[in-house]
Image 1: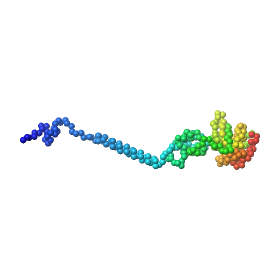
Image 2: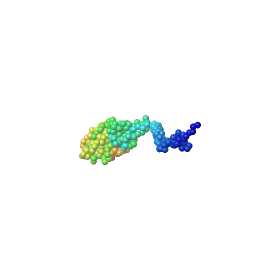
Image 3: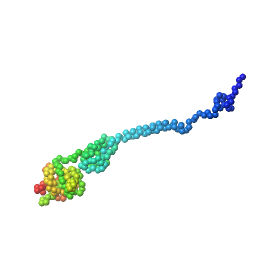
Image 4: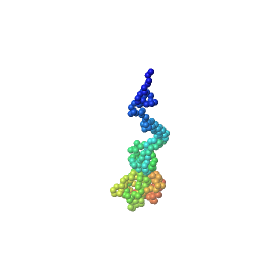
Length: 271
């Protein structure tokens, strides 16, 4: 009968042949620490973050499309009076929701808008449309444009602008003064001698007479009353059909008289 002899290095309670007692320096199985387990979970966290970002972007895109597509259009950075040339500084780019009912100029048409003239009084913050600009100011049928050269002492202190209604007064030495309503078309630059050329529109029949006044140098430019400005414009156009401006009395009577009852000039014959 054989008897199992335990190994000399085997301790009590150890299975034979386990070799647990062989070599005290043998390491136990390695268990991953918390840091390694956290690192293994990090890709999952990143994937979840990417999914959330994608969901947020998709929601933003849906909200953007639901509120309407934004388009870049031209808007006004400042007030622009009728007839003034539009500069690049007068324009800004605004983004609005696209609407077929709105027809503003696109931001890509900025170069085309610069250099055009305001066809009406433009207000700051408004969108710029095609009807707001014009290549040149329209001269009414039956009118003619005359260049009026005047010194600063012959002009009002208020800066003249295209579209303003004025009254040109002729002041000869030995005859009674005469006057003529006109509309400012273009305002030239001031020369070194202080003179300035202003293009004005008057009736075609009054153009030669106004040119004679300007050549004589005996003129004075007045601002027409605002209340009678529209009437003065009507009278100017009517003068092109054969009428003339009324004799100068007070400025108000001059403008209104030219609009309602033109009479032959009193001092033009000697001009």
